[in-house]
Image 1: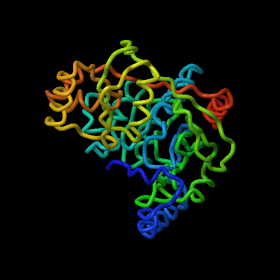
Image 2 (image 1 turned 180 degrees about the vertical axis):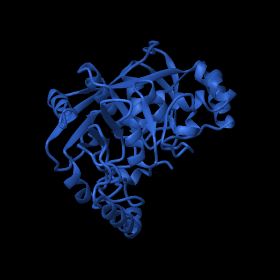
Image 3 (image 1 turned 45 degrees about the horizontal axis):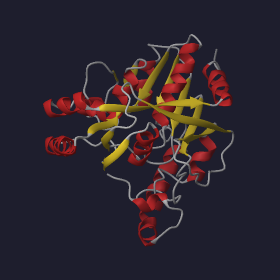
Length: 326
């Protein structure tokens, strides 16, 4: 589902008000679940990188940056994720599957460190603990199945928590008040969009900056940019920041499985206007593992990636948390 625009505006219009009762029910159920007694405790520290909103905050780049810090310290991080968008429940170690099996984020994480996909977080944590020194959970903040040694909420600095309502009335997974007691930190992610929404009152708060990069330069090139992520606008901003001239922009819903007809339409539009197709790393993962048409388009694409640069205070907090049980 593509997030409706009214989710991200502080003003609560008619649609938000009409959907608010349904959101209140969803929020109450989620809040009650979060208050359950924490589940199993893994044999190694568990660091959780989650977000209070639905998609697009930048938690996966932050999780990857945290794994990089741990590696630099001589530790062996293991990612644990639900594998959103994949059909396999796990627990399993990612290796050779496609996006339809384990989700695009799991494929991305598996390029960095061993990655476990598991709908059952406790079972996934048990398997992950056999492969490394510390577990980095990408998402799962709202899931009490696995006890966390440190948990951070990632917030997109440009949009914050939107209208503050729970889905379907807004972007929240549960009310902010339900999240706050379980958050050891808040991470404000700046993607260079040049705007800042009101921030939640959660301390300590740290900053992270997303830096775009490509293996092949796109400065001065005319491009067709397409993306199926939480907020495609962030990707388009990244491509422009690298100097690309976006002649055509095609946003798709988060984790969108591209059909052959959509791929053909992208290829035809790019060919007709002599445009270079550009997309995100996550979208590339889905294209590469989605069939012959997807592989063909993937081979033509330039990928715009982002790396998260964490502030020194956050780096130190991660290091302390990773050795908390040492």
